[in-house]
Length: 334
Image (cartoon, rainbow, N blue to C red; front, side, top):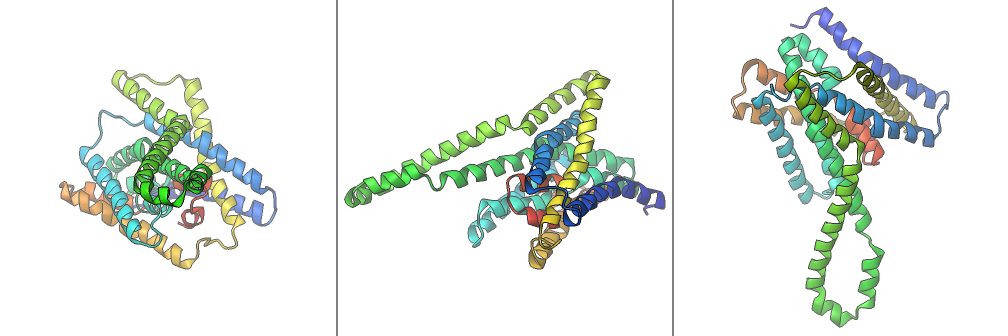
């Protein structure tokens, strides 16, 4: 049973973020304080500076030597199985493009564990829940947010290479009989070349992404600090904290700005909103329950895994969706 004191701690962690979102909404809807370019700049600051610093902070505070193996396995199976299932469904559906797979993956498997989950489940299940959820937050920052970025970059590179003017010109220059004779081999070679080009482009962008550097540095520092009990110098710790903590507020502020720029708060429409809610609160927990039971999770651990999977949508996936302009209306509604 959650006490009133626990309820207050949950509210004290979440309400300030929604204050930032409401303030942003009013500043656009009523006061007209920001231009579209300024709104875009705020989101870019969050994507390129605040979120990477937050990732470093979270990862560097995650003890890699004391992780729950069952939690890691269940979380990995949930996310990989959902990604595979979404890819298969996407191939069979009329909207079977990578963009819908990425958005559905974010909705189903990336909850707001850091802000909402830790205080809520700590109140419900005690300190053990907070420790386990901090590990889930660490896994999200190390693996799943970077996978999400990789998929976004892959989609962006795929969209650019799809209509290459050079390929179109080569096809026009070839006579029809040569095109039919060499069509199969040329098509195969073109596909291989396209794939190599896309992967090379994605690899370069991904390696230059600030979040990639933050992840690697955070993981390296976590290994060092928990092995030899070394702490960051206070001046560095506070420099990171002031920007990363402010980044959460700025992320919610960016969300409010986006919502105010839409014609309706339910920007994606009621049907898609209902689908998003169903994905978030039904499919996500079900995908977590199945592997958790399969690997023998029972009792409190099972409850923690399922409840955290049913938490509201995380803010980081929206920030990425806004930056890459891929269905931010759906994630903002969620």
